[in-house]
Image (cartoon, rainbow, N blue to C red):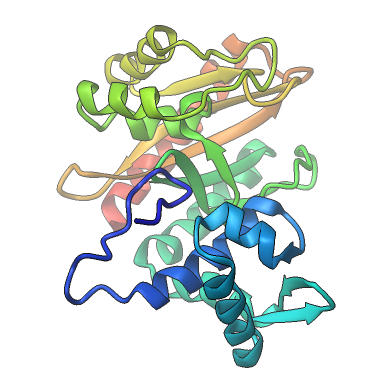
Amino acid sequence: MAIHADGKESQESEPEYVMGLEKGLSIIEAFGIKKGALTVTQAAEITGHTKGSVRRSLLTLCGLGYAVQDGYSYTLAPRALRLGYAYVVSDPLTKVVQPILEITSERTQESASIAVLDSQDAVFVARSTHRRSLSSGLGVGSRLPAYCSATGRVLLSDRPSAEVRFMLNRMARPALTPHTRTTITSIMREVEFVGKHGYAIIDEELEIGIRSIAVPIRNARGEMVAAMSLSVSTSRMTREDVVEHLLPELEIARRHLAVLL
């Protein structure tokens, strides 16, 4: 049985489960894990599929225009962007939040983002970057570890504590900086802080020199559908300044979105 990168087992025993589709999608995801070209051997190691099935899948992707072969290596073709774009243009959330993000980013002159939880990661589904803000290379589709990102901790706070502990036990929790919280106890303390105070803040846990603050985004029924964050350079704002000046801006945006969702 194949195991996905997020640790989930495939459901190939289900009668209507299409194993071939799983293989193709897992290979497309493997390019993101490798962050570059793949050989058949590398793709097989990442996905857990046989070299023969990986080779057939890669050749099929090439035939459909989603990948390009160069000798023994394969790369994704621009056509692969259609897959991510299909999500962005079809998801109601991304269409509603972008104008609010733009306004918030302009008012604060900082980077504003909306993220949702995908397995162990907080994934950006919308983002607005002000010209003064940090150029960190993050954009729509970027993934941050849920255990050490402000948006991730907000999203985890909506799950039962036992489920969060189970997730943390299964995921790798490397120290990305000397300030990264990696123990389950310390992370759970931060997740519980969100439930009590309504926001999460990280202080140089993802990257030295960056502070981020995030709040939950809820729909009209009170269900958490995403998390919204602002990031700032530590040279521009102290932790106290972030809470005093950026949290009210996030609260304004959150209230506007609650009416629209």
